[in-house]
Structure formats: structure tokens, C-alpha cells
Amino acid sequence: MNIITEKQICAFKNFIDGHKNFIVTGHKDPDGDCISSILGVSYILEHFNKPFLLLNAGPFKRSEIKEFEKKFVNEIPFMSAEDVKNCGLIITDCSELSRLGEVGDLKSFDTFIIDHHKTSTGLDENYSIVDPSSPAASCLVMMLYEGLVKNLDKRAADTLFFGLCTDTGFFRFLREDSANVFELTARLVAAGANPNKMYDRITGGKPYSTRKLLGTTLGHAERYCGGKLVVAYETMEETKTYGQEGRDSDMLYQALLSCEGVEACVFVRQETEHSCTAGFRSRDDVDVSVVASKFGGGGHKNASGMSCDGRVEKLIPQIVNEFSKILK
Image (cartoon, rainbow, N blue to C red; front, side, top):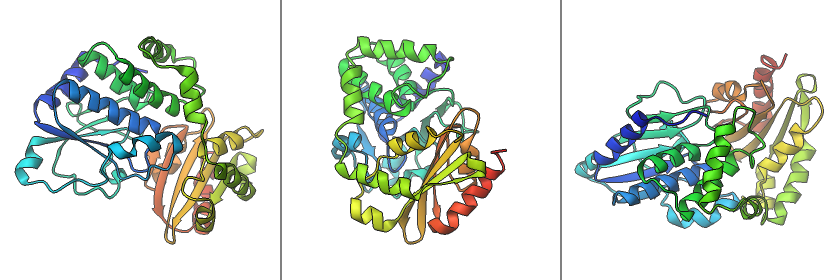
């Protein structure tokens, strides 16, 4: 992970100084890091007495982020041309407007992006901080917080630690080049973040239906590419039976990637009659972002996602075909 430079901190401060109020948002179907980094930015804006609106299209399906839903609106209110001119848009954990969902027209806003996804490229460095080597957008926001607000308080520490833990799988995704991530983590713990309670918060409290659906989804799993790829799916009928909260994708990915010989796995959901979402996970050198980008998605080397038109039965062969090109 790279350490944010003084130039980057100044660029973000200049953006704050250049606007009267702000909209802070992140990708639709948010995860812990998305929510955490949005809230972390809002704490910085509070410090500078800047009014802000928290925006997210949702849905807030994950049990660990449910409590935050009431802090957000799901569409922008009416704004005059003058209002738009004075308002800065800050996007975290995402760099594409298309991934924000149906929240209203945001194209006219001055925009600053804070992201850590590999597929975020070609952005103006005066209006963005992008570091694919960072394990979480929350890490980038934490360094901005320390650079601008200075000392972390317990609220900020708890919030940013939450995002870091969710995106690193409670640190199991980190590698030997992550010493400075643990240094950053130590500062969060010193400021009051509790690893024991955070682990229980993230992994506990899941609806019983998640375990029922997990069994059903595993029953759909099939191996491809000589056993190196596993693909599982969820139907609309299963969503109806177990509910929107009946999903525990992280547990599914762990189960599939723990199988001998498996290098990548995919979980496809039939969201509507004509559209699907999919999550991609992999081990080591398999870059799933390459496959996700073929379907209009993106993300990290070992964790990506996408949303596109189609049916599960037709989409899975297309996904398998793309993986056959990289799983030799």
C-alpha cells in the first residue's frame, strides 16, 4: 500500500475549500468498505463545517451494514443550477458513475474520486486519489483524515476499522507486502477500535436463511476449466424463498476456493427476469478483473464484480469461455 502524499492531501483539501456543500456517495449494493469510506469522508467534512448529504442507491442487504441505511438517501433532491455549481460530489470505493445506480443525474457535479480498484484508471490526479495497492478505500480515507483532521477519535477509528476488516476478509487477503497496513491498523486500535468485537459484528448475526441458501447454492456449483473454476448461481425463486437477506457470499467464496485445485470461483445471481449480477474471486495470480471487465464490471485482481443484462443459463457459458482464456 502506498502512503498518501502531501500533494494528494492538498488536492482533496482544495476540493473541499472550493465548494459550499457536498454529496458523498459510493457504489450501489454497498459493502462495508463502501459505507465506511463514505462515513469517513463525512467526518472530515464535519471537521471543516461543510454541509453534506450521504447518498447510496442500496439495497443495504448485508446484515453488517443494515444499521447505517437510515443515514442515507437513495436519490438526490431537486437542485437548481446554482446549487449544483456550489456542490461537490465525492465518490468513494468506486470511480464510474454507472456503478452508483439510479440515484439521479450526477454528471454536472464537480467530482472527486477516492478508490482502490485496479480498473480505476486515467483519472485527473487533481480530482482523484486512486491506489490499487491499498486493501480498502477506508485506508485512503483514514490517511486523509490523519492528514487533515489529525488525531483519530473512537468514532472514526471504529468506522474505518470496519471498512478495512470487511475488504481484507479480516486480514486474510493481505500478503507479505502489507506491513504498513498493519501499522495503520495499530493506530486504529490505539484510537479505540476493538478487533474482537468487530469480528463478531462482521461474522455474527446472520439470518438463519443464509445457511439454508448456502446449501442450495452449493448444490448448483459446477467445476469447469479442468477443475480450476467453480461457478454457482442463485435463481429468482430462491431469492423469493430465502429473501434478500438470505445471502452470505463471503462464506460461499471461502467454501469454493478452499477446494483442492480451484483457482477461481464465480457466483451469479438472477436479479430480474432480464438481468444478472456476478461476483468473482480468485487465488494468487488469477486476475478476475480481466473477466469482469468483459461484462462491464471491474474491481480487484482477486475480487471483482459485474452487473449486466442476461439469463443465468446463457451467461454462465460466456463467463466460463472468458475464464478458459486465462486458466491454462
